[in-house]
Length: 114
Image (tube, rainbow, N blue to C red; front, top):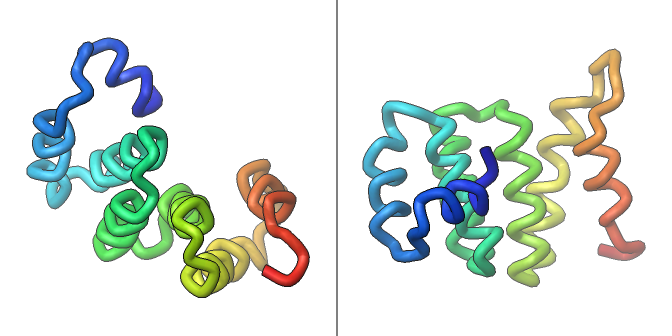
């Protein structure tokens, strides 16, 4: 379920749900990722980037968090952090035997010179 589906289902846009997700973050890495998605989808990229980075402390190789950190840094206009974040999923997937659509989307979103 996407973050926006969760908000639509619960009818809540307040920070209570986000606080609940953060409280469970240490037990469930997926909740930190979901909290980050929610922040990004509601127009809060700096906070989303912080949540993605927090989830990466627990699960450093989680592709979705790595890709989310790239999207959040780009949306926040932080080019230096976006470049740094972009390198991580590239390294993670360098030796993979398949193509990740999400990685292709990240590559397509990269602007020349960024």
